[in-house]
Length: 130
Image 1: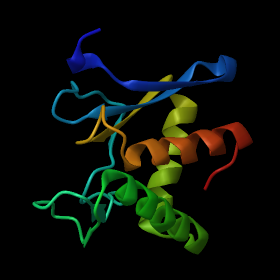
Image 2 (image 1 turned 135 degrees about the vertical axis):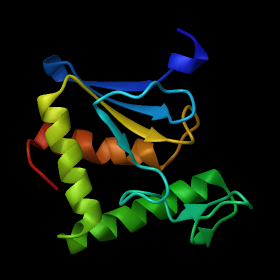
Image 3 (image 1 turned 30 degrees about the horizontal axis):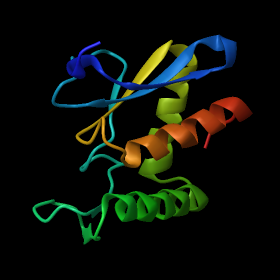
Image 4 (image 1 turned 60 degrees about the vertical axis):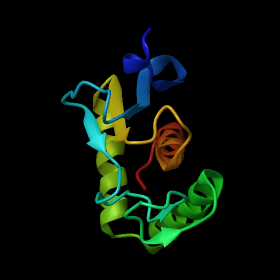
C-alpha cells in the first residue's frame, strides 16, 4: 500500500461496513466520498495553523480536535441543523454502502474527521440516526 492509497479504516462487526478517512489531495474520488473539511457542514472551525481560514485559532492540533468534539456534540444536542443532516446522510450512506470515505486535508494525521467517524460508528452500532 502506497502513501497515496493509505487510509484509516474501521470495520464494524461482520457487516464489513467501512468508514475511511482519506486525504483530499491524494485520494482518487469515488461515488461514496463525503467532504468534511472547512466550508462543509462538518468542517472544523478550529485550527492550530497560522494561515488557516478557520474561525478560531488554538495552539495545537490536539486542542483543535478537542475543541471540535465539543462543537460537534453541541450541534448534535441542538439537533435539526446542517451538521446533523450531514451526519445522518453519512449514516445512511454507511448503511447502504460497503465503504464510505470522509474526505479532508489532514489525513493521515489525526484530525476532526476521526471524531466524525467515531460518532457515525457509534450510531451504526446502536443502529440509530443522530
